[in-house]
Length: 463
Image: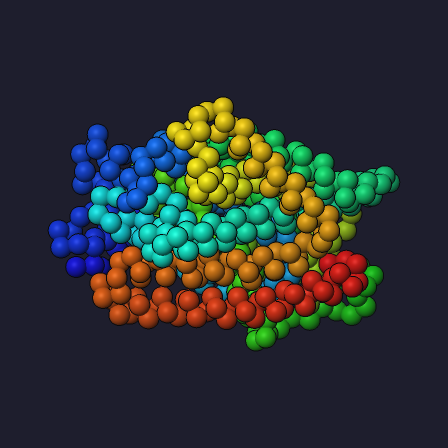
């Protein structure tokens, strides 16, 4: 009999549910140690040569937290204050709610990975294939790539524009297009050189530390340089306004906030790297709690300081100060380190789908095709960044198109399909239905708002 009751102990946060009459542990821990690795990584219809590509179980729970945080905390800290200004103080509730939902769907998706006793489906796309066949596989591969590439696109834009801005402060000039090209080349090096998440844990730790530094700088500086009659941005001539709730902004805000927690595309690879995968549930809970705290710190202070006058990125609300410029440099460095975590996850999905693996092509051909594919990816992203260099609008558009689907819909649909609706408690089925409905509304409404905002930015020539 299936069960979805949550134990509050760290060892069983979403990890000890069993789905057959023999109550087999979905983590595979009931297996003998020598057999555990092989049995847990076999795909129902996939050759064992994929195992090396997908799973390398020698990472710690701390490394997994760093990977999740590195994916989640970053340039979003500069966009979310603007998101709060669209929805009012109610945004605080949404931040906490999205963190909890992000943990919950992560637990559900891991259960879907282990829905077949003794077997582990090792990627986001393969879980969707197990649930919905080839259509589900290619849909998941496409949506994963769109989400990860959209995130990387926003990083290229914000890094390029802010570097150009910093050089302008110093009395020089560097065209934003050239700046974006330079940063894309710098990002290309680790992206093509690193193959799996196991190889970038140190990169993740550094990325998290730089992101947290930026959060603290933005929070403190915003409060120190909030709007006053003697100091304010020239385009604003009145005190900022604050509202408790702005109803029309809720759907698009949900889409934008879910963008920051929609790491489910990387969860199979993060979990596959964990030495003790049964720790995944509480690891994700801890990671989302830390991410939520960081977002609240930067977003609340930004909204307190600038209210409805908050712009994206919030760096443009702040004066030319050494500490702000230092934070800008740090966030650029963070993006360089964080991009491999995000794009490697997407590339692993696509490379698995196309059979770009040493076990199939051999090491030399696999390396060649990996470099070619990832170089083309980076080139396309650079071209789009140069064509539409509007940071906030790009994040909103990517959020509406992809993250609402990745965050709300795919995990719950796969969970219900693979486990069987008749084996899932009715209250949990109802909850899954609510999540899917919220995702659908946020997707449609958020997409409409994002397109309108992007059209305005293109007409005005700035975001």
